[in-house]
Length: 217
Image (cartoon, rainbow, N blue to C red; front, side, top):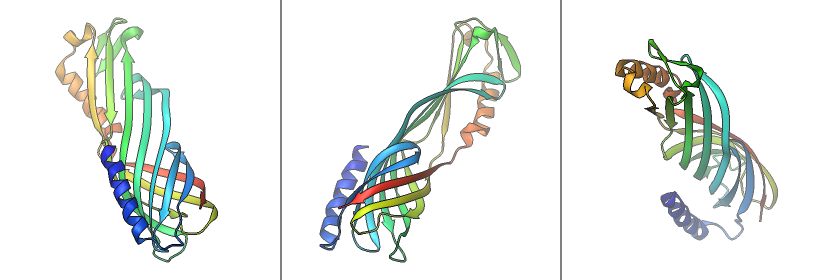
């Protein structure tokens, strides 16, 4: 996060030096995935611009069924992006590249209160103290590539569209607590994790889609 902010300040300073006197910055509010946020755009010329924005959905809770187990799920998605825009036709359409600082995590918790848990190929009788927790994480920093419309130079109200993806491989880890931790075979745990990794753990890119309304000064 600190690295991204420092890089943004450096690029912004360079942008001020390179921009024409008519260039002006603007603020905008993106809404989409992941959630709502706030951003700042700095046009450098009719062909190039810099942006920084942040967005979040906070925390979301749901019940999920994955590989034969009912989980209580908790999703958290926070993102800060540092972006460079290229307007190849000196119009509204742009190509975008940059880096993100993220906190993307999905926590899945299966309780033994229901009387049993199936791990791998074995069904285990459980107590209310047994827990099987799975954590899915994306890297804290990822490259971003996309395209869109908007954030060109000019004053007044502006609309924008962003379509793209953060590129990064998800990791899957687990914890097993309670009496079941002493009885569960490692081979069954490995089978369960392999099934999860072949499902939600195959994430390599997180789509990003947002609509924005802003004002250029």
